[in-house]
Length: 138
Image 1 (tube, rainbow, N blue to C red):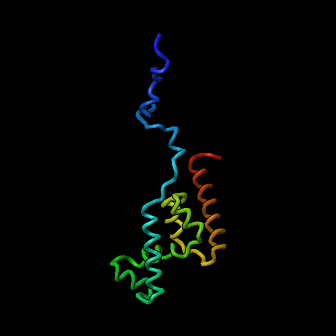
Image 2: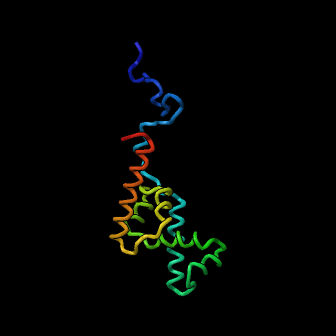
Image 3: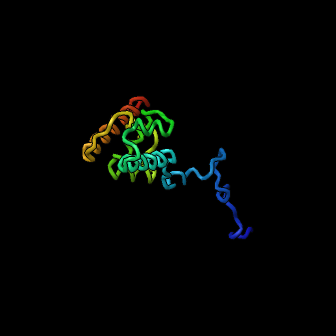
């Protein structure tokens, strides 16, 4: 009779499930990771905002010319500097993905954080409903 201390059950020690996927049951337990592109965009927005506040630049056009990038990109990124703190925290903690944030920045956001909360919540709900309709769910 084999020694119970030396029994190996299936692939449990390799961390691989069938099909070669490494521990799929642990995937949902992973801590969300911030999107590097969004974190960089937030940092850039804060830097540009400080430069405007300090008089280095007076407009998004000046920033675009100095950085050799499009004015529309500068405008979208600068909107990140106006986000309510909980949205910034969600980006930095990985709870907001790049697609959702960039889609929301296509249109101007209100300066009021309370209005942002209402607007973003409504946009999130509309996006969820559209995704459900597109997947055939009712």
